Length: 341
Figure: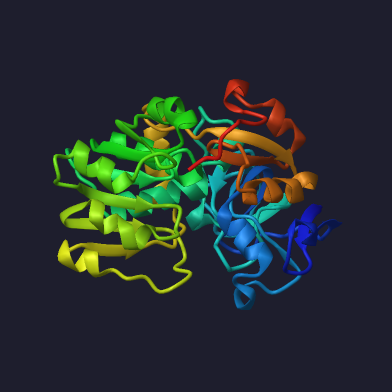
């Protein structure tokens, strides 16, 4: 089978398209023909060598799968050949999704939402599971509460807006003004252009000085240190970003705030919850650009670019027909003029 192999840590040029043996499913495993994958910040972090002790080289990386079951191993009862499935491979535990075939444990695989194309499903599995873990399992966001989502036009952010609205929250988000219409279409109630206005001042103005109940950090930088200023008393902050340097969290102490850090876990339960939201029309991923398996280096380079012009996710059409089978090409922008945040 064809696979994009990471032979050394470094830039996008570190990938090489190679022929490798097709995997064989063992007991409790499912062999999936991969139709689509996607690109996440975690993918380029792995590629550049942020986790060298956890990724033996050469490696097949990638963290999203949407495809069709080709074969099942002994003991598998949930799936049969021909089933359309989606999932996130176990992170740092075996080959990833940048290949024509992938083997995974039955327990982490879900039935693909029938209303989503493979490109859309592959663009939702990791970011959807991450947003679910952050807002449901960690922040325990409740009906009537308010939340500030940093980076509402990005991969995780655009899903988090939809999830928070489905949970009955009032949603604030930071995006550039060029992305206001996009964020509003997802359900955001209050839009803050982070390039023109201080988000803390905007939150305090819009909440009459109370602050928001939850902050969801998808961008990093000084967000951990500054966001407590936008929190209400007993607020919660959830971050999915590595802490690159020590942070002064004295303001969090003054707000009696709680902090949560998310490294998403793989299980079918989250996928089924997300599928239910998709079926009810409350959640849909936005595919901002599509690349082929051979063009994964270009996809990585674009996602890392500070002005990449992509809203939502960059999808990878591993099976060429996955691109043609997309249910809504109007959702696949070849480029935009603003940097998602």
